[in-house]
Amino acid sequence: MSGVKDMLRKYAGQYEHWLIQEDGSVVDLFKSITTIFECKPEYFFERCVNSVATGQKNDRIYHNAIKEYAESVIYPDFEYSNIWAIKNVVEKIPSGSILHLSINDAIRITNFFKLQDGVKVYANIGTHGIDGCMSSFLGQAAATDKLCYLVIGDLAFFYDMNALGINTIGSNVRILLLNNRGGEEFYYNQVWKNEASDLHTTARHNTDAASWVVTAGLRYLPVTDKTSFEEVLPEFMAPESSRPILMEVFTEMKHDSDLIYRFYDLSRPRDVKSETIRKSKELIKATIGQEKAQKIVGMFKK
View 1: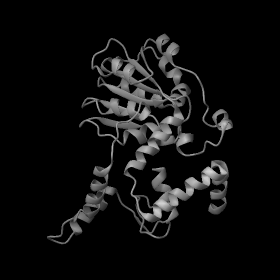
View 2: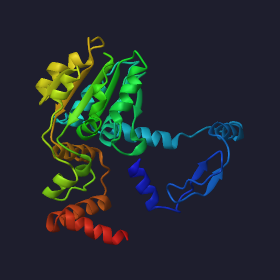
View 3: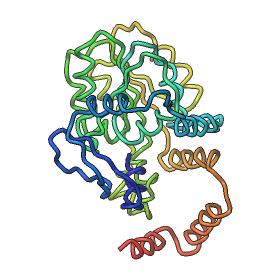
View 4: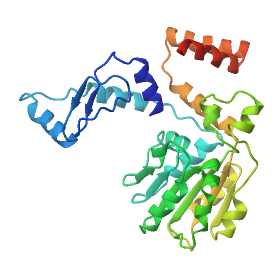
């Protein structure tokens, strides 16, 4: 959502922005509200359907354009990484299960892959932070007999690790813990600048969850490469288990971030203008460094 928000704000005032808000209050997220419809969404769309002229049909131009673009995405044989681990779990989650995604990276990566029909997906993005992701999931899992999967990063996990101390966690719980030693998001969004960033921003660490997970009574499955992943995956995905299971996948956050961008690059539209801009940015960063380049960009945004 953040990428769409930034793009729409960049072109604020250059497009129609309709808001359907029953109480008529102004919520101008993109700084471009042109019309407010004081009604329920159901009423709005019902009126739209009933107002269509007889014989007129949706030409599906936008639908087909999006579908064509989605089908053009190139999926490589991913290296061992968090994106590889997520792909090989979420695509195998059986129909009828619940999948809970903790925060940015888990949501972003999972969106690349097709889930089985009937998998219900939830996320803890509401606060745009790492607050209580695991607590939310465990509460949800306690209210159902369905298989419940959580995809969570290391910082979000350790922030909420006391939730595992609950002694009533069901055997339907499966937790995929992606431990890439810190906040990859800050490499991904290029906030990382130097080694000081690892200390103060990405919170780079060498902690693992093994002792606490075992103490809490969960089955613990450590993974360090593709071979060890494939050895424990059948147990992790099995519908029956005598206790909840946590699989901790160890990767490296900079490598994970670089791999996502390489994945993007495979399907990126290429034209003279965009290629010139991209190569110019890379040259500037290589010449003066990322930190100075970001400062210059910040000056132009003011």
